[in-house]
Length: 218
Figure 1 (tube, rainbow, N blue to C red):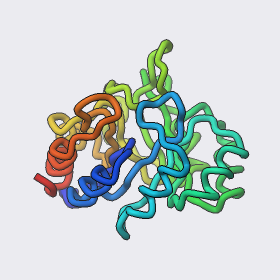
Figure 2 (figure 1 turned 135 degrees about the horizontal axis):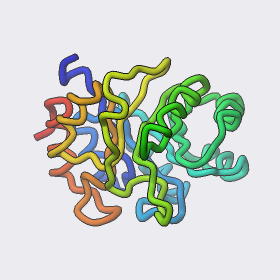
Figure 3 (figure 1 turned 60 degrees about the vertical axis):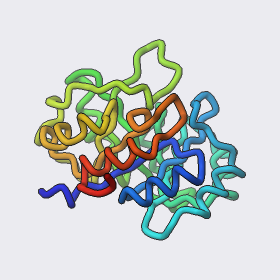
């Protein structure tokens, strides 16, 4: 694997400048958050504006946390998304149902704290189109992701699953290259690691992250 094989997702975009920075840096995915408690949360109207500004080739990913059908229907009626990211406690059955209901690829986040969590990856890999392997949030965490915490990457080193997967959890421009080398990840996701303050993306950090992961940007 070369660095050019790695694809980057920048999650939690909130402004046109974010879209421009992510596109310029060479990322493959732009993430929009539809979870009210997140500092990166967007309304459907705002997300629609950003999604329509996203250039071709940059996949638009919507992050949802245990969203019901009514909420998902309302967002998707307004926002042109390419991928649904489920970042809550959705069951494998829920993943299957949403794929059928909306006809979009579904990425399921799986939280990892210790070796006992690893088998869940294969369980969701049997039904999702893509996996996002993230740090399990602390019990008292307000957010299911974007907390800037890393798990022990050795737990998944050298492992493979039946669908593409993405590494997340506490990645930064300084650590992403080591994370890729250790885990063999071909896709990486970052949110808080490229922010100046919670919810505010930093274009220089985005460029540095992509430069470290795929050799583009800075």
